[in-house]
Image 1 (cartoon, helix red, strand yellow):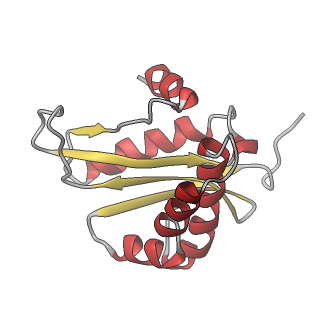
Image 2 (image 1 turned 135 degrees about the horizontal axis):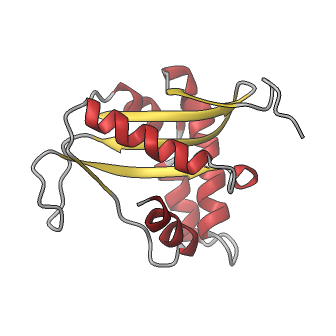
Amino acid sequence: MTTTAHDAITFRAAAPADALCLGVLSTQVFLDTYATQGVSPSLAREALAQYSVAVYDALLADATVTILVAERAGCLVGFAQVKDGLGHALVPAAGASELRRLYVQERFTGRGVGRDLLRHAEKAAAARGADTLWLTAWEGNVRALQFYPRCG
């Protein structure tokens, strides 16, 4: 099977026009990951509060936030969100940034999209002065808990 330009995954910084698709994509990935037993009221509230277009409009306007997107044929398939200058009690580096989210649409997992987004996020954080990029993963997210150690 050959890869055409139509099939290629490209990476770029998110733009304000991406807020709508970021909201929907993040809602889809969040529910696919965490609503494995159905949608509870608490999950519904969290999805609607955390992944609205207004939330992404604000994030994209925040100079301390970097959002990188992966797209195929002009459609978003994943994204990484980095917050500059955000440390943690367990992260000793003064110049730390946090990887807040790395979401990949289910049908694009296992294709290297997440790994490539992580590498782009590391480079973006370093370019903005971070010497450490840290993250946390929910203990029930087995896929994430396996993914990050594999990526080093």
